[in-house]
Image (cartoon, rainbow, N blue to C red; front, side, top):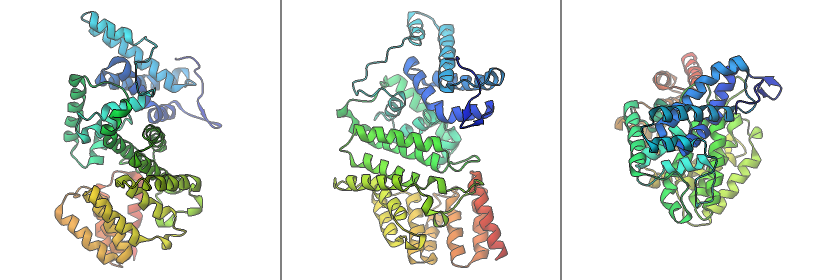
Length: 423
C-alpha cells in the first residue's frame, strides 16, 4: 500500500529518496518480480512493471516522502501497472480473467507446503526442461535483478549470447506451461543441481560484485543464505544442500573484513581474523561435518572444506596450502573448469612457491579460455610480485586493470601496481 509515507530511517540517520530507491531495489526487486510472475504468469510483463514501479518511486518519494514499507508500495504500484496493461490489451474473456487475478488474494495450490514466492521463482527457473546455464541465468535476472551484462560476465560469455539465452528460457517456460511452484518432495532431486547453482552464483555476486562501486552487496549474500537454509530444510538428506549452506556461512563469516572503513579491498592474508564472525564459521563447520558423514562428497562440500581450511587457520601463515591445493585437485574431478584450475594455481603457488603456480597460470594463458577474465593476469601479477619480479608483475597488473569492472578491486590493483613500479 501507499499508506504511511514519511522519512525512512536506517538507525537514526535519515535516508534520501535516491538512497531509499537504491536500497529497495537491492532488497525488494526479487520479491516484487516473483509476486507479479505468480499473479500474471507473464515474465516479461512482471519485469517491465517492476521497472516502472521503481521509476515511479523516485519521483513520488521525492514529492511525498518515503513510505514506511517500500516493498509493499512497490508491489502495489507494479500490480496496478500490470492490471492496466492487461486491461488495455484484453481481447476476450481470457485476458480479462488474467487481469482479475491481480486482485485475487488467495495463494495458488502448492503441494510442497512452501509459501515463498522467491523460492517458487527459483524452482520454476530451474525446471529440468531448461538448459542448466539458462536456469541459473534466468534466476539471477528475475530474482536478483542482475543486469544482462553482469550475468554475462559471471558466465564469461558475450552479452548478446546471454541476452538470447534469457529470451529463449522465458519462451520455453511459457510454451511448455512450466508450473510456478516448489515441486513435491519426489521431484526435488531433479532440480537440485540447478537450484544449488543459482544460490551459489547469487551469493558470489553479493560477495564479490562483478561491477559497480561496492565489492560486497550484503543483501544478495543474506538472501542466498536465507534460501539455502530453506532448501536444506526441504532436503535434509541431501549432503550437497548442507555443503552449500556450509560454504556460504564459512565465506560470509569473513564478509565484514573484506573491505576496510574506506571501502578498500583487504586480502585474506591481511584480514583481521579476530573480527570474523566465529559463530557463523562454527555453524558452517558443523554443517560441513554433517554433510561429509553422509559419504557422498560433491563440489559444494569440497569448496566448503577449502573455506574451512582458511577459517580454522589462526594466522595466514598457518594456512595449510598443500591441503587446499589437494582439495582443488579433487574439485576438478567434479568441476573441470578453467576458474577452478586458476584457484588451484594460486594454492600451488602458495604451497610450493611462486614458480610452480606461474607454470600452471602459463598453461591457462596459452589455452585462452580466461583471456577476458581479470583474475588471470591479477593472479600472475601476484605470483610474480611474490617472486620479486616486480617489473613483470607491473605489466601483469596493467593488463588486469584493463579488464576489471569492480571499483574496489580496481583500486586494489592500482595500489599493487604502484608498489611494483616503486620497488
